[in-house]
Image (tube, rainbow, N blue to C red):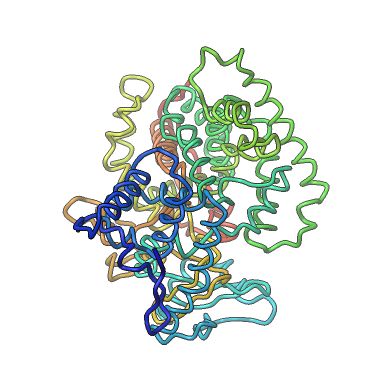
Length: 562
């Protein structure tokens, strides 16, 4: 086997070594045996020998499998190919060398693009030192959409001295759905700092590669919709208990109340311990870390203020309760939840999940909805109150859901109007406003060369606000999602939970949770906006969420629960 190069310097496997799966005519029995051996390795669980690992690594680095395998087969085998390609040190060196240097330079020369990158347009409104902070605080989605319309799918923004390259619009979404796994990796610096505050060295969101795939698969059942609906009466009771704190005919700030519902539900159902007495500590701690490490709006000392330190100690005490409640002898008769899964893995694979990493991963349910699910649920409630016709249709479904007592998991699936209202809420107010990434392997997109090491924001939801995809895009219209319209079905048009290997792991649970909370509120009480003409104000950092000025008033109880 050998590597050849064309006149532009583009390196590729010699034709004699190409694995021609679909065109199996080979020139020798040895070539056919090699082909069969390689295919068996990537489509089975056997451990290949070093020779075959090197062959697979070279083929993968040169994109041979992507070219010769049908798309569905390639996607099926992709994770396995990547895992094999990293098994041997020599293979890792080869694949990294080819992808990071040779191929990048060759593509740059072939396409006539400057290797150094840069030259992309800068977003308008930039101010010295603070950059675009004021625009971000107003509305991050609106600002990025406006810049996309003016500048195209590639432009630069800055935030307190840090520059970010933004990739936006449906063309960016489509490109990165195909190529993102090879081109980008996670922002490890931000997530490492985040995890270290919990005493850990890594977190699911900050990992890439085979270890990330392994941990994601491990945690999938723990974050599934099934975890949320396994005890619906308890989930409903949590909402009702919070609603009992609402005074009649007096204003209630919606977002903090919904946060308490969401965090309590997720913690109780996914880890078995109610965090009700710790919700304020969880929110204080997570907000400080998000602003320091993710949004990078606060200096690092803000993660160590007395208030944050006290909150951290309380969160650690909650973790100790979770640990104590999940001793194997106490859980033998229980359905495994996320904490059971993680702790069993800690016992069986201590090199994979350390004690400190266990802390980070175990309190994940308490943190997962603190901003994201809480924001989406609150914004859906606002949208319904602003559209009384849709509100009444959703309420009718809620009453039907509760008609025979506690809702059922099957019943939650049979709420078409509610589901379309959720989809439209997530279109206008997506859970993931941007994905923060770093370019792993240089690539070309939209006429620009994007070099390795560039800090990137992937602004997926910009597509949600484009009139060419969604007529009158700022109008709340749940019928966009009817089968005869399916505006969201256009390629790259709808990405409320992100996409790729780091898409939201709990998206099924999030939608079920939104359904259950909204249905319970509307079934139990009549509520109105306070004041009636209120217009939503958003706090955009660290994620777009309702301002505390969003308030409702409970006019009367329809049915008091419990």
